[in-house]
Image (cartoon, rainbow, N blue to C red):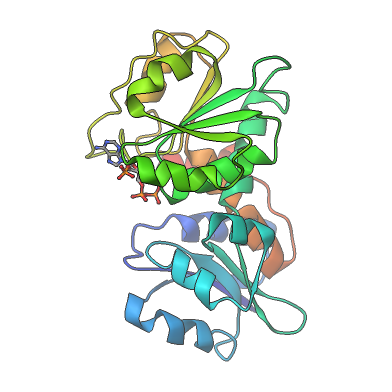
Length: 276
Ligand code: ATR
């Protein structure tokens, strides 16, 4: 039996076991996927124990993504760009490989929801709200696509400036106060802050200047329809919810550990939505 895991601290809230468990059972594979709670001070030892424990690999969530980056023996290009690891596996030589599938997960869901030509041919501006780990992954994913200018607005300016380093020719840090002007030319607006999440205040921005063709995405998925997405939908914008990123980021890990590429189906989505 092939074994995989998700490690975090805390880990009870993780929806990854439901996602991978669904794929294991619908594909009829002989595998397991378990949640493991590991405190930060024990994480390094946990990484070293994986091979002997017989794990093929697993997912890494908060607060261990940077520690997994530091502890992996081999890093993928995506992990290096983002500076964090969310997926671990072993290569043919038994080395621990750290990957980050968040960027590809975000763009896969974007393509699926908006169509691969979502940015259109002319204006190619994207506005990102927030500059944490999730913003880094979203920007890294978008840099692989056709966006020619990605503007990042964050409450703490130094963090958006750090994201600019991903590609200073295409990424720009803007002040939160300058958001109105940036929205005017946007083709895609993405919220990567935690605002709008259940229990947090809503994201308080005006959408009046957003062109009708601008799509609005949120990486918050609880609630599925955030106040931002609700306001955008009322104004007729195409919207992209945050759940797709969570589902799509899980695909590459599953394929690597269990040898079969799973599909994000409406049935899987419904299963997770019912649990939100
Ligand atoms: P993650 O790694 O999941 O992105 P994070 O690093 O905590 O999480 O980042 C959360 C993002 O939400 C940050 O951009 C944060 O802004 P700061 O960098 O200024 O902290 C943003 N955020 C959280 N609460 C906010 C608030 N009340 N107003 C504006 N931005 C907020």
